Image 1 (spheres, rainbow, N blue to C red):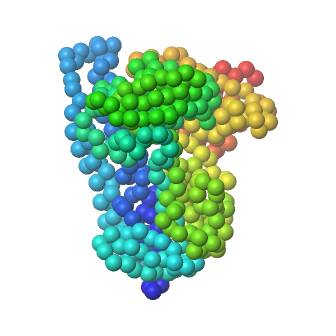
Image 2 (image 1 turned 90 degrees about the horizontal axis):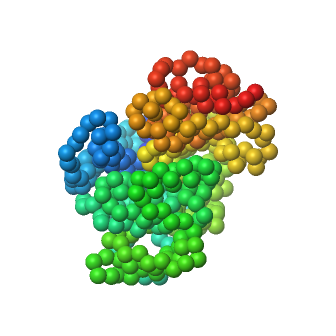
Image 3 (image 1 turned 120 degrees about the vertical axis):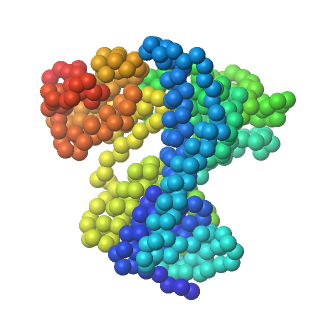
Length: 460
């Protein structure tokens, strides 16, 4: 059995940089990857979807450019070209990541499925055939997550799509029925509607994006409905069956039966951790009731020397959080620092159009935590830049501590909402209070300049 100083399982956005840094720090390191370098972000998530979102945005602008005095007589969606461009971007990133690992000294790479055979011993079933057994004192799990396939009668009898397989379509679907009303579901919903598909979104809860404040949720829903999407809440599909020319779905919506006829079904109702194949019972590593690996605030499991990073540990499932997991673990182990996950902010951006940029506490969370708060809201129709580019959808929202004037959180539903949110995050990180931003000098006419006006909404 070959011994290493460190073994990293999974080449996602935590595992890939971690294995290189460990090797460069002098540790003999092994990277084990079952599929492709780059993880979900590069292969099935951020990289391909945002490439396709850009194509969908171009179609949207072509449809509405008459408002700006530009007439396009006709255009069509070349889905094969959309897919080709997306694939080229993915392959560039994937291949670049693999080459970077392969050229790193002190670092080995195995493609195969890893399973524990002892506390810190692993058997790798190689993709190319055969097996290898390895062990290490330090083991880092970055195995990721995969789409949840719900238990619905008749689902096994139809050809359904997931957030992974929908990326392989090279023709525009006629009608997609989407199960789920959260971030991934809504990005795909708007994207394919702009490509030309009829879209029906079915969300089990009372509203889409239940973790957001109600005004944010309803604001985005109205934008999507105005664009032409059908969104149903309090909706649950209970039966699928093949039908002539497509798929028939039976659902209960608000207590009433409704039938849908569609060409495609997309399952986007959550993700589950890829922990089963690891056989973690051989290590004593504890899992939660959903199969995620339990970790402490420094990302170490209950077994000393075994760490879990990224989606597999049940934390926020974002690329930037996985990457930050890597930096925390590496700096603590190699540089002797004392960083904790509890000390970091949680920014994120949903790439619908307009984007939803979010950081910190929602209004609801701030009230639940007992803060005395003030809330500032500025509709984008009052933002000069938005008016000039003719996109006044959405609003900016900030929640502040009424006593200290600190910014507690922000939601920006707007064109470039993620960029505007990031300005507010920097203020939060630096302890800049809202009254200082109110009179800050920003370049005109930018979106961020209107943070002046946002905080003018708060009366001292």
